[in-house]
Image (tube, rainbow, N blue to C red; front, side):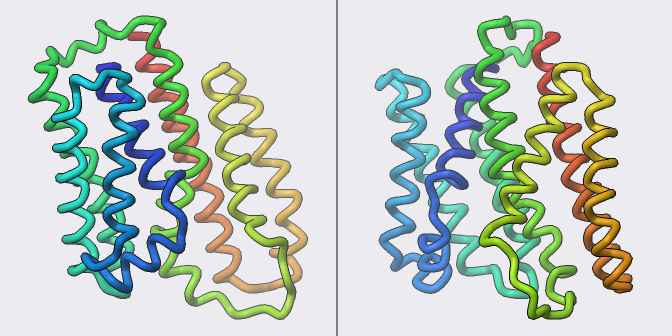
Length: 237
């Protein structure tokens, strides 16, 4: 099980931390002709070898590279503006399934969670933190893209990437509160955010903006709480 978690962590790092937006844009534009696509695929293989720290798994790394590349190329050719969000989620599901399949073939696990020990906590926490800071931000962006398009443009400027980092810190705090058993902290954070947002919502008198912020807040908190509870469950076993 710990190897599977390491492979998931490698995927999160390769797909979200080490893939700049410029690479994504070039892949969408040039598709299979994009050199960034193949650099991205190679990075995934190198990450697998680095995190497993054993060169004897080079065949596993190679197969994961190939499967990742095939899935990415298919997505590049079938997605469009109308189904982009759906394909983003489907693409991630396919990647996770391919990792699970290859992990099962190579390690033939008994899938007994009791095999996890306290030594696995660093990998569980690392995967959870990478997910709630970087991965979930992209997921939320894709899930809410249809709503964000209908918001009216405003002349008021905001800090560059402010929303991104506020969301990352918000989910990180919620995750810490959950895994440390301080559930009252989650309520305090939600109340504090509500106070800050109340003025904006009261002045805007915009129902769409109110719904957009409410959905985003609940989705963000829900992802962080679910991730924290899953991490605790894995550690208990």
